[in-house]
Length: 358
Image (cartoon, rainbow, N blue to C red; front, top):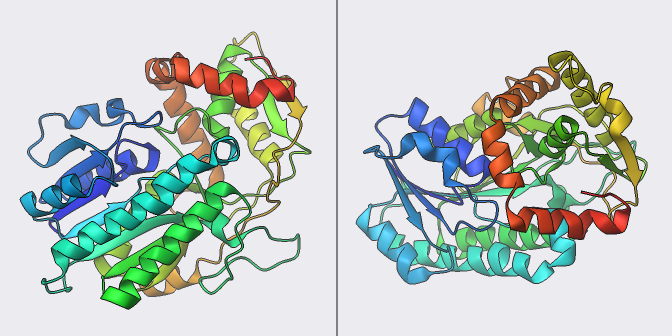
């Protein structure tokens, strides 16, 4: 792993991964290919501008001419595919966007990589695909956690598109011998997350005194992984994971969404003692639930622990506090995104019919 192409590297997890690589592997050359759609933000990587080890190229993974030229010019031996539409609510309103990027885009990217790598020794090459726990569907209260052999049962346009992309990646391994790995991960949180997602949205709304929308009864259960721990896991899979294998990643916690929001409001009560909106939990507002909302996710991470000796370093309390502190210290970054016309339009579109005024 010397020349790595990161697709979707200006997004939340992708930019954190690039930071992780550049901070821990100074001999790597990183190429970041990102279309810079609404969630892509080069400010996430501003400190890398001018670095000899980092190159940014604006473009689409579906542009095969561009992708193949990058693979050749930079002699790419590793591809990590973060490029995806990833917000369930947006997939409900605009499902075709998710099919174009997550299914067709991934398929075209795979085919470009196959063409360029077809005559190369697969040893030292790796295509790693980032996926989600949502492809497995929803668990009941007493069901065991998902594992690598769990049946796929996606319930939203987003999760269905990611399931399709997972199947394509596996197909390119079994049909063409492409050296792939896949990781299915639980909910991520941490620095640089676009503020439409639950945790940054709660932090942002608390600071502004806006309502904290809670879907349904708020008892949906999720597993949460601090993004730095995810980045570490991806690197370990790239270095020591077995080609053709899937690895499940998670933080081994199962709070309800309401409990997550209450934890954040409690941290903000402590860190913002002079806030006029204390106690911030008073801002909580229950709103109509998302259509088809999955009830519970949980992951069995014993395989990655056993084979790669990976464990999450941040428990939920430690990770949430670090995340809240980062957003409080980076209000200029937050406000620049929150003030975008597209973000305001999306927030109004998604929440106005739920009785939440922006």
